[in-house]
Image (cartoon, rainbow, N blue to C red):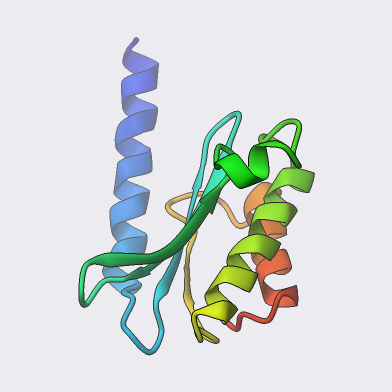
Length: 122
């Protein structure tokens, strides 16, 4: 039990450390990526107003039929492409990437690359 608690505290510290440096605005909102063992989600957030502009997850109704399992690189790339398309439809071209304390590797990197291919700049 103690090891899980230590890991959770360290993760929260990393999240806070990243969030000190990254903030979203109306011109450049924040693209926040949350990853769990079985799912991945992405949100475009305007921190100045405190609202989510758009978001997508492997648990979303429109995505569940397309993706069999949400915990792999293929699913992360699909979510990155969809969030990029949604953001571009709202007129958002540039974002600040918030990896939420995760390493820029694997699924997080696949999501970021797919969002870039969909037309987002960060």
